[in-house]
Figure 1 (cartoon, rainbow, N blue to C red):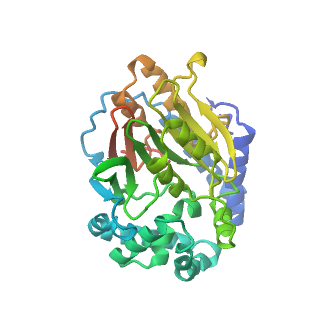
Figure 2 (cartoon, rainbow, N blue to C red):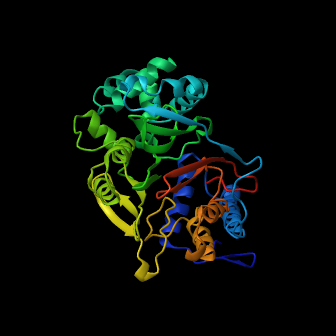
Figure 3 (cartoon, rainbow, N blue to C red):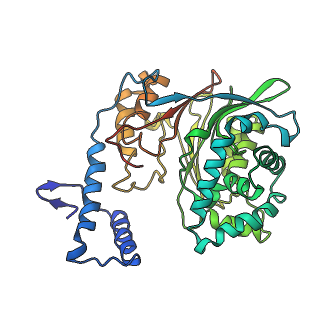
Amino acid sequence: IFRNLRGKTMKPTSVHDIFIISFFVFSHLVRGVRINAASAPDCFTLYCFTQYCLYLQLEDCRSGMYPPKGPTYGNVTWYTVNLDLPPSERWTQVIKDKNTELITMVRTIKDMAKGFFNGKLVNLVDEELPLIVDTLPQPFNEEIKGIAAVSGIPLGEITLFNIFYEVFTVCTSVVPLVVNVNFQRGNKTVFKSTNFAGYVGILTGIRPGEFSLTVNERFSVDGGYVGILEWILGWRDGMWMGFLTRKVLENATSYEDAKNQLSQTELLAPAYFILGGNGTGQGCVITRTRINTLDIWELDMKLGRWYVLETNYDHWEKPMIFDDRRTPAMKCMNQVTQANISLASIYDVLSTKPVLNKLTTYTSLMDVSAGTLESYIRDCPNPCTPW
């Protein structure tokens, strides 16, 4: 029915897509839903949802969206984190301003944890995670303790929030906590980032004049749970992803130095690192397992590869049929052309559905040469895909 239903022809279904569809059907069986004539609407619902996602991929590439205006965006507040202060005091002002929102978000993550292992993960949060803090590297452990002290939130819950990438490996909607941070030492900017208040790692950042860095989730069976288990058992060769990216932004001296650290350091969870530099050909997507690097996909002008684009899937594999953001994004980038690329045209691409979707928390634009970071809170008006 996915190839031809009511005269609507679709692209051939790949083995990968069949696996995803089979997983969907299997999930219904696990939940006790029998796949027969009585439950046929479930299969039809999946078909309709897939068709809906494919329909949204037909949206024309947006233009004139920058500078952003209207009710579907918001500016992100700037804060300064003084790296010369003791670690426990660095985030005090941010947490005081965002404490109510942080309490709400931490409660949400803890509620999510109740769904794992019959709620036993919550016991781990309350009883064991406070003990894990002291095993985390400096200065992150002391910063986490300082955030817990200022916010009044239990240490275990703040720790969970800071390792949520490794625990859940999922994009989490934390819009009220989005902040821009200027990390300074000696009253001079070391790097800038768009952060979630209460999270001491980095997901999006720029070291002015040197490189920009963004993290995308990479889903894998050998994910963050395995890395955390190894950490708890005392096998601590891996680096927490958010701590590695911050360490790189704080200490790497060049694009090449950053690329080497990101590709060679063992991790607790798989990830994609999107790295941009300040010179010709300096741009790549680093595809990581927990242990090693699968691929470094770099700009190559000789091959006509003037951009690289990452949407949470290995670039050599096809994305899922109902989560194909890559195809419309590439279509829009190709329409822009290299000659017309700018922050404004990139913002247009990132504003085109389904590149823009319900899970889009913010859009960041970084210019390494100018050392600028612009971030905007996003909303995706209906009709809009959930991811």
